[in-house]
Length: 386
Image (cartoon, rainbow, N blue to C red; front, side, top):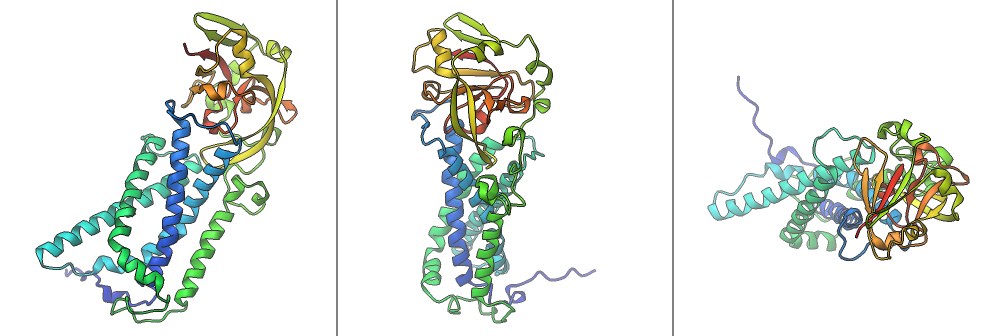
């Protein structure tokens, strides 16, 4: 049985598959990837234990904005990437040159494009799955997403450098200019090139609006695909429940104690002891790496006041231990600038109500401008490092 012949670029005669369209879509795709890369670096650094330059505690909404931009840029990049790949797809079937030197250059260029496409698809797919908290893989999302981000952005820089002359001519010319079209791209379609571009911008905008409500409260009514944009206990959504963390019994046990430790000295406090201490109230957003965030009013004891009870000096990091039995981040590090900030609380209440168990009862950490994954719930121990 004779196999069908592989397609050639002549099989793709649409005028929409042009350098003029690819360059314009690629420009905005590059902008989205650039924003996602830079904000991803911020998020990765904020979660590091080692920070040569301390992550700032102000403005309190800083991480909320950068992580919201990270997810919005990644979401907008999805339709842009699909259109970009559609426009350049025929180039896969261009017959490679026979001259050895030109063939080697062509092979290297195609290899770099393969890395770029694979990295871009991987980042967007796994990023969207992370936003939905679906992890059907065995590797660390944070570590892998960070590493592939560097590979992808490097491949993008190489691609832009190689194609810069073509990109410059395409962007400075009229979008309907045919001087850089493939000879076989002659068929007019239902859409004009401008129509295709407007449709692409519209699709990217709709994708952002359909998800941005997770970060922007007034968009929640239209963000039908926004994760964690609904209500939760005390009006704040949750990521991880007490049941999922395995703390349902221990969190409400009468035997609960908060241990404060420094230099061999330990002090234990019950929840009632914490309630009897001077209380502070702070309005701080909680912002998670998945892109959702919410403003909230927290009431509790200043962490700095607790550390003063055991004579812990300022400028020391604090190891925070949770009751949780399952999942990562059961033990986190609270850097000294957060521990010493008067806005950092061991919260006992949320929005005027007693802290719900799914929000971290009997007590949880809340600090300004800090990733939600590090705002440890069900805190049972604060240990000041020597």
